[in-house]
Each structure stands twice: as structure tokens, then as C-alpha cells.
Image (tube, rainbow, N blue to C red; front, side, top):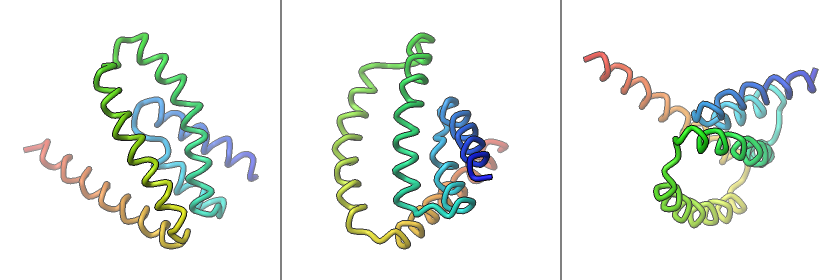
Length: 122
């Protein structure tokens, strides 16, 4: 059963990641809720899965001329800098606290998405 769920979760994360919607936003909760994976471990799984998927998605988006290299470089410089800060921060935060922080992030994200949805209709 566990291998079936891993395949299913990989499929779901891949589809959402390929569409640029962040497959990890779904993958992390799926791993922690349904497979009882530790929050930090789930984030590690997500990062490794993301690296592999990102290579293929980047190739396809570049072929379709959907990548602005100048913007990517700017994003990467600041992204890498704060990624290092985040990695240092996660080493001192307990997994349970991180779980609540991530849950709060998802709740805020859902409120924002609903807000945008209703603003669009006006």
C-alpha cells in the first residue's frame, strides 16, 4: 500500500509541479498526513523530487520560450541566499513546530487564493 501511495503522490506532485503550481505544496502534506513521514524528512523528499522534476520542466519551458533568463538570475541570487538562511533556521526548529508553521502558511495561502477568486468576479 505504501508503494502505491508513493507512486500516486509522485504523480500528483509531478503534474502540479509541471504546471508551475508547486507540487511540494501538496506533496509535503500528503507525505506527513497519509504516510506519517516526519515534517523535516517530507521537506527533504520534496526538495530532492523537485530538483529532478525542475530539470525536465525547465528544459520544456525553455524550448517553449517561457523563461526570461535575466529574471531567473535575479530570482536565483536572492533565492539561494535566503535558501541558505532557511536551511540554517530549520536545523534549530523542532519538527512539530515546523509542522504548525507550514500549516499556517497553507491556511494563509488558501485565504489569499479565495480572496483573489472573489476579486476576479467583481
